[in-house]
Length: 500
Image (cartoon, rainbow, N blue to C red; front, side):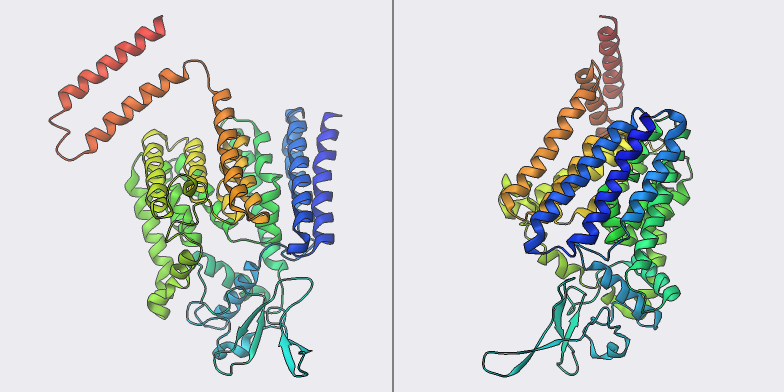
């Protein structure tokens, strides 16, 4: 019966996902409240399913987690993308590459590529009569978001599902190779389904990999459901097909490889992840404490090799719209950092965020055993997401695999906070949701802490300070004797506390 109850709960989640996709359509101002209610219901059902899974006998866990993931994933295929137009850009980049054109060379509205435009990405403009009796052209559809551009050669109106049609692509080479591979197989006329199906395949494969990894490490395989049943994974990774899913999967692969001391391969996977969306570079510190040169060289060489074909064909244009995007999103002047900007002026926000991320990276590097990098990855990625506070929840796809590997469900408060930001853009609510996420994580983490936590923390900070001091130029030989004395004093104090 306990297995049945959990199965019913995850089945209810699948029904809720499918119902919302079939009835709500593409998110709009008029339906935003409905999306909030639907998302809340899905997350509540997810939480109930996780609680009930705790009572399921161990022998049934693997099958239930995998079947549940497949059922929820199947439901997530029932509609085209419903919150983002990014998959249209993915498809277009793949189409132009399949025709031998660099995706960094032209914008979607470029007249040179007019003959490549499929109608499902570039629907015809609709005529309408203006108040003065003249005929105009309108871009727009009830079922999805359509943007307006202008052909660079003729000046004609170009209606397209691609956002920012007047700028080149922003995506790095691993992502572009992924887009090309899809279109090389399915052609230009297949719509969104190929990317959605591949997204589901990655989600299910990752769920299976998590189950295996958790069992091999003697951890609870139920934790795999934190990924395999997570509504965010299906909404952003499958229905909306964000390439961040590929980046997250590659970072998990890199961490698994390094944790089994296959550091060269781990570096290659990390380099491929960074060349997917750049932000996976924050996963590096947790993997570098031992033999860092293998991981670093593997990552750098992979990143460079992936970029070479595009640099040869396009030159510095491979940067695409990245500089403009950072300015547009407010990262250049600091206005985008929702939580940090509540405490410091916008002009100071960027250096403060850089300091927070840098210090976190240093501590993660010092404290994380690469053979067991899961908590370090969770902290590094989670702190970065809170500090940077991206406007889009799919960035949290990088975090969820490490929630599963650690069983630290409280860190899912971060993607929930980013979801709040997606549907309710008010700055005050954004700040309060992020602050609430931080509070939840701190309270649950303190609850998890065993007796003696404060003493262990102080000892750890003292050890870290000494290790950093040894790294400073010219200080190693001069302070070696004092450091040895410090070590003996720390051990003596620790032994005294243990015996008291």
